[in-house]
Structure formats: C-alpha cells, structure tokens
Length: 405
Image (tube, rainbow, N blue to C red; front, side, top):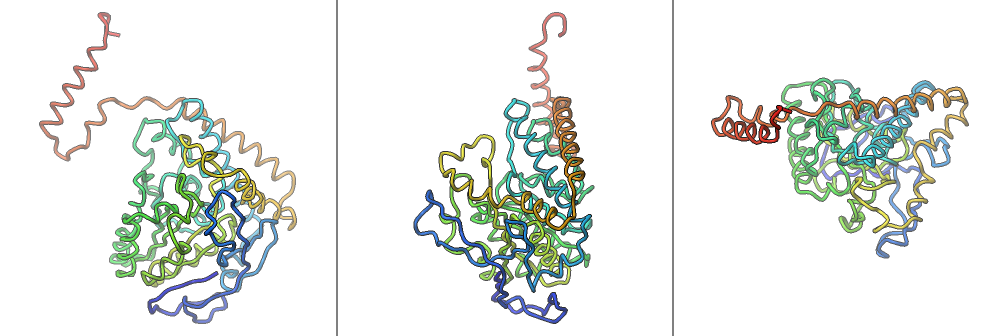
C-alpha cells in the first residue's frame, strides 16, 4: 500500500502509537493483476500494492499500518459484516428481478461491491454525513435506511424516499460526480462549526474523470475539509475501462492536490473497514481529506439497461468471481470457527424473508399525487405555476367519461 501526499501535514498516530507521516511507504500483501484479454495491451501486468487483510482464500494476513483498526473486532461483529453483505446482495438481486418484471424503471446493481460498501459504511459514526451516488445500497443499509425506501425513485413514485437528516445519508445522486462537491461544501461547514464529525463521498472510477470531482479535491485540500473521498473502482465506467480514463492508478491523483491517497482491496471487507476508519479519523483530527480507492469489480451490468457482454469478456468476470467478497469472509468464518451451519441457515431464511418483503413493498407502493410536481417549486407560489396547474387539471379531466370515471 502506498500513501502519498506532496504537502506537509500534521503528524498522526500510527498503529503502533508513534507519530508518523502519511508520506511513507508501507509494505503489504500485493495482488497480481488478472490478465484481461479484452483490454488494451498497454495495461500493466501487475498493479501497485494495496491494503489487504483477507486473501481471496479467506486467510488473514497482517498489515502493520492498519491491523490496529480491526484488532478488537469480535466474532459477533464479523458475523455482522457477513450478514450485512449477504442481505445487501439479496436485496440487490430482488431489485434487479423486479426491474426485469417491469416493477422498476431502472436499477443499478452493486453485485461484487458489497465489501467496499459494508466495510466503509460500518466505519462511519452516526454523526458523520454520507453523500452517495445511486449504487450505495450497502452503505444505505449500514446507515439504517430501510431498503424498500431506495426503490421509490426507481419505480417513479417519489424523488428519494427518505429524510436525509434522519440518517445523515443524503438522497441518491444521479448526476455523475456532483455529490463530491456537495460533500466538500458540507465538510467545510462542519469544520467552521467546530463539530467532531466527518463527511464521506462515494463515487466510481468514471466519476473521477469529472470536473466536479477535481474541483472538490482542490477545495477540500485548500480548506483542509474533513472529508473522505471513497472511489469504488469497479474497472468499468459503463463500457469504458479504467485505462482509457487515467495514466496512473486513481489513488495517486491525490498527491497532486496535496493529500493522501490509498488503494485498498475493495473485495476485502476487513481492509475496507480499517482503511476507512483511518481516513475518517484523520478527518476528525483536523488532518484534512483522504482519497480511498477501493479496487473492486462490477460483476453485473452498469444498470439494467446495459449489456456488459458487448464490451468485456467472460474470462474477466470469472477471474473476479474467484475474489468474491462474501465467499472470502465465509471461508474465514468457517476456518476460524466463528460461525456454524446454524448461523448460515438462519441467515438464508432471513435473506428469503427480506426478498419477500421487498417484493410486497414495491408492488404496494401507491401512485404519486399527479399534482405534487407543482408543489415546492417556489417558496411563496407563482402565478405561472398556478396557470400550469390549472391547465394540467383540465387535461386530466378530459380523460373522464360521462360517468365521471
């Protein structure tokens, strides 16, 4: 793992309790890059070291820098992380099926990214504030947002479905990259208020090419904002591979703005938990922003309107299936005797119950009030809006038959 920065920063406490700097290089277990025959030959055959605490085989490996952040984790908490990932995947699969059945207009699956979202989501505190994109179903789960509330927008019956202030979890952001600026501004406000909390913004590798993200990096660095930029690099921005977006690993972009960048194994829930805890701790201690690149993979389509078989090979997907985040924690739990067959059986039953609840909730969602779109356009109302409302009412009335039906 390499943590890089070009600016002088305050010393921070390392895992060993000694003051250190974030400009040092720490040796960790590296991972060999999977060969992609469908990718450009200019791609490097190996990737830089990344933070990893659980191998794909489910073996625990040490890391001098980040072990301390998960040193006290209990078997119950490990089972909790596993449960979070399993139920999030079940919810996601049900939502995908509902879209295929015509119950949702669109769905953006998180399949394969459960560890990145659950690990980082469980690292946050209740008073932290989260700015998601439209794929952070696992983070929403960690923040206590009822999963059925995520579906209203995709069914077209509301514009969000939850109160962001109830869980400090912002509404989903469809505009690519804009939430990074929202998070930066919010974090600047947190700093001015003197609050002991942090902000985390989620975005993908594609959004990292947006100007809004670059501007948020600049503002957050200059104003030392307490924000963590959590980039889920799932290898594909719809049909564009990462090498067509950047000449360097994404986490290294941070050094040009003067704050640390870290690459973490995005399929390792323990590593994601540890690194995000560290980054949020930096923010709360007044040490400014951090960029975390969770190196993961989008196992399914970008959204249900996408066909990934048109631009990537099956061998690539199969190679990443072997690194499945849920499977590796399952192996670790079994090898460590932290979970038995009874636990897995109960979780399977809970998973099926969640699927049924989601189906029933979606199909029973009431249609929205047709006139709601005219509300809250202006704080004090407007004559033009009143005129448009009246014309819309007349148009709706024109469909009624003589019996008033």
